[in-house]
Image 1: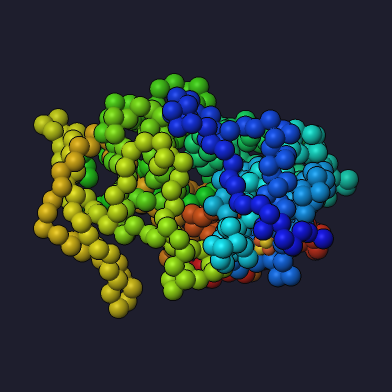
Image 2 (image 1 turned 180 degrees about the horizontal axis):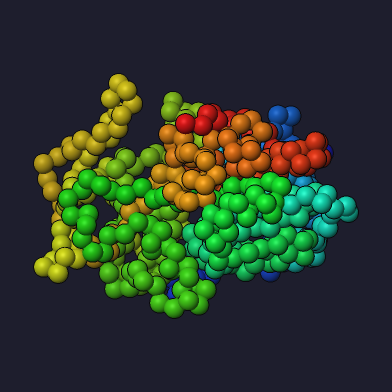
Length: 501
Ligand code: SF4
C-alpha cells in the first residue's frame, strides 16, 4: 500500500543536470551520474509521492504509458527499497526501460493524477524513477539473459535494429524462435545509434543491452540491406516470418523557399548521423557546425537534438525557428485538458546551454554568397492558419523582414514516412497515403508472413511506441508460427487504420 500523503511531504524534484559549461565541453549525458546511495535516497523520496491511484491514468494507453507500464507497482516497490522486485515489474512490460527512462517524453507524467492541480506539487517524477530502476538493475546484476527453454524450430527475420525491431527480436527469441536481425548500417541500433545524440543517451547503454540480446540467442547481421544484399527470394526461403521495422526516415524537405538549393542547407539527419558517427570514432563529421551561425528550422525534438549537437560542435550561434506561436508554460485546459498530452512550451536541456529560439516566424528566403553557399536568412513574422478542409497555410503578419546570419541551416520539419526501398517493391508492399506500411489487426501486411511494427507502421513517433509495437508484433508472429502465444501484447488503443492503399 503506497503512502497516500507522500506528495504532501515531498516536492517533485527532477534529476540534477551537470553545469552547462561542462556539458558543452563533452558529449556525455546531460544528467549527473549520482553515487548509487544518493540516487537511491532521492528516487525513493520521489516514488513516495505516488498515491497508488484507484484509476492510475499514468499507465493507461489512451493517455498515459503506451506500454502499460505498472507504474504504481514499481513506485511502491522503490519506496520500500525493493529494487529487485521493482526491476522485475518494470521489465515485465518494457524490454528497454533504460532507453525510455532517458528518451521518452513521458506521457505518463502528463497523465499523472498529481498533474491535475499545480497545488499538488506536480506529477510524480515517473521517468526519473524508471531510469533509476533500470540503471540499478544493471549495476546490481538483476538484468540477466533469458534463454528460451524450448526451440520452436521456426526462423524469423527482423529487418531493422531500432527499438521496435529489437523489442520484437527479444520477445521472439525468448519464445524459442531463431531470430536474425538485419541492419543495413555498419552498427546496430537504428535511430538509437545514429539519430539520438550521445548527450541524451550514451551508446554504451545501447551496447550493453545488445550484448544481452546476443547472449539470449538473437543473431545480428550488419551492413546488409535486405532486398539488395539478401534478395526477397532468399529471405522467403530462409525464414518462416519477416518483421519489417525499417523506420520512417524519409525526412521532410523544404521545397518552396527560394534559395533552398544553396550549399549549407541540410536535412536534420544529415547533421545528426555524422555527428553521432564522429562520437563512435569515425572521424570528423561531413556537416559540422564549428564556427558557424546555425539556424534550425522546426521546433520539435529533432530540432532540439540538432541544437545541442551544434552547440557542442562549437557553433558561433544557434537559432531555432518555429512557425507556431510560443506555447504557454503551463497546461491550457481549454485546449489540452488533463490527462491528454498538453500543448506547453518544452524547454530541452540544449536550450538552457546556449542559443536562442524564435516563435511565429518563417524563412521567406535563403540568401547565398557568390560561391553559392547560404549566408543569411530573411525572416518574417507569420501565423499558421487552416482552411475549411484543414489545409495548412503560413500567412505573414508583418511587412518587416529580419535578416540574420546563417552559414548552416538544418531542416528539422518532420518525416514523411518510410523510405522507398527495393525490399518493399519486391514484397509487393505499397505505402499508405501517410507514407507508412499498412497491416491487418494481426500486424500482417498484404504480403503473407510479413509483419510490420514501429515507425514504419505508425509514422515517426516515440521510442515507447516503438517498443510497444515491437512487443505486439512479436505476439502476433508467435501466434502465426505456433497457433497461440503467451507473449504479452500491450493494448494499443489507437492502433492506426490499417488499410493498404
Ligand atoms: Fe502514482 Fe501518478 Fe500513477 Fe496515480 S497517476 S498511480 S499518483 S504515478
